[in-house]
Image (cartoon, rainbow, N blue to C red; front, side, top):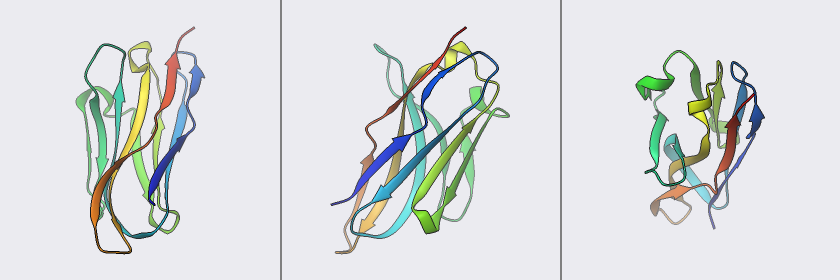
Amino acid sequence: QVQLVESGGGLVQPGGSLRLSCRASGSIRSIGTMGWYRQVPGKQREWVATIFSGGSINYVDSVKGRFTISRDNAKNTVYLQMNSLKPEDTAAYYCNADITDVYGITRNYWGQGTQVTVSS
């Protein structure tokens, strides 16, 4: 069984930094696109950043220049380095990945979410 587990959330002051991690585990053959989303209660989940298997990267405009997405394929892990955090970055952050299992079946998976709160 494949699962994604995030870590690294917490409380940080405006202007501070946090690094989120998301590790995939289970019967994995390969991992394609990986990404991060965020959600505030009462609002739709918002796409934040994507990193493709070939290394191409995209960001939502609101985080460009502040957030950096990266991946370590040997560790089946995607990261989100968040700098210059603002109160409006407060949300639950979710990782997402397209994963092919050992049986050759490709599914889209979500992590359980990790809370990021930016407040003084």
